[in-house]
Image (cartoon, rainbow, N blue to C red):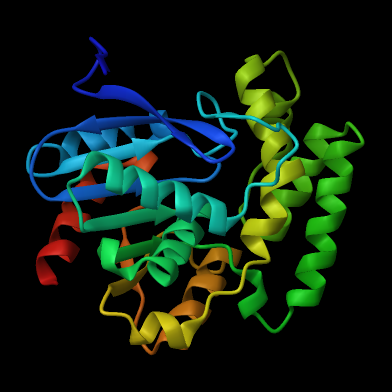
Length: 277
C-alpha cells in the first residue's frame, strides 16, 4: 500500500474476477464501507476522513470507474458484480462484519451485498437508491431512461443530462448544465460518465431488491433520504423501498449528494444513526 500525503488514506489494489479494484483504507476501529456507483473513492474522501477517527473506513472505485480497471471494458456493471466486489474487499481487509453505507447506485450495491452476504454486513444504510422498478410509473421511467441513454450515446451529452435531471426531478438551470457538461472536460471524468450511461445506469435502476430476503436477514437496513430531496425521483424510490421493508426512512442533511456537499453534517448524522443501532 501507498499513503497519499494529502490525506490519511492507504491505497491498494485487489484482483477480482474480471477486474482490478482500487481501494483506500483510513483510520482504525469497526469497519465502515462507503460505496458509490458511479462515484469513486475520491468523492467520499472528505467524509471518510471525518469518520476515520473512530472507524476503519474502506472506500473504492467501482469496477470500470477511474482506477478500477476491467479486463473487458464492455462488461456491464451490475449490482450483483459490485456486491461481490465489496464482499471480496471486506474479506481482504479482514475487519468485518461491516457497516455499509451506499449512495445512489452505491446504495443499490450495498442492498445487493446484504441480500447475498448478510454475514458480512451488520448494518446497511442505503441512501437514495434509484430503484425505479418499485414505482407504479416504472414503465414511463424505463422509457425515459432508454431515451436519455440513447441521447447520450448519439453524442448529445448536454441534451442527455437535461433529460436526466428532468426525470430525476432535480432543478438545474440549462446554462449551468451547458457549463458543466458542454465545454472542455477532464478525460477520465468523460470516460467514467460514458461508462455510467452505457454500462451501468440500466442495471442499477432496473434492479429489483428482494424485500422478503432483506427483512429476514439479521442485517439492520436503513433507507436514507436527503432533507433537500423532497419530490425528487430518489425520494420516491427510497420511500417505496422503506415501505416494502416495513420501515420508516432515515433523513440525512443535504440532497442526493449531501455527503459531498456537507460532509461534516452528514458524518454527524451518520454517527447518530449508527449509535442508535
